[in-house]
Amino acid sequence: MNGADPREAANRDQARASDPETSVWVSAHAGSGKTHVLVNRVIRLLLAGVPPERILVEMASEDTHAQAQHIQPLLASQGVDEFVLVTSGWHLRRSMGAFLQAGMTPIPSAAGGRSLGAEEAGLSFLPSEAALARSRSLTRELIALQYYRLRGWM
Image (cartoon, rainbow, N blue to C red; front, side, top):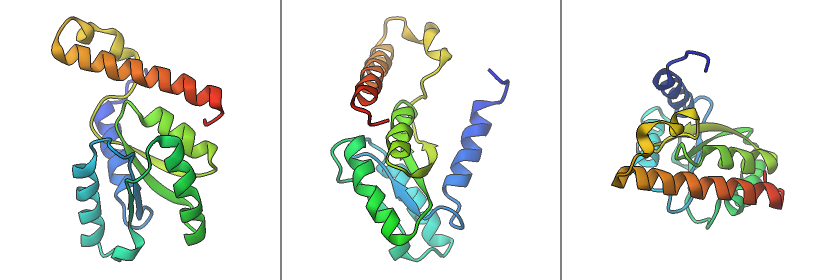
């Protein structure tokens, strides 16, 4: 680990992600539970003067791969080089891989959840309801990462 405070890094990423000068497209996987975060980001963009027609919130795709395939032509038709990809920390690695594979340059923005990392090997997995939920999320994401790699989607 590089010694950087993860909270400071997350705050920097979120500030960059909601900067209306560089980021006017917001995306999140359908059913990811990030509606509250998306609404707050859209409000910040609107308050900063970004025209509503320049903000896209895509929540119709059924999976990350489909979303990347759906978003790519939309962004290309608008001449957008960068956009904000909002998803849970658990899902961010796979999302970034799928969007990069589709030829896009997303700005990653983790919203809720935790990112995959060495800290998951600690005491947070002792038996408890919360630990079971984390274990389920981690297992699902690790399987999905392998599936996406095997399919060539990232």
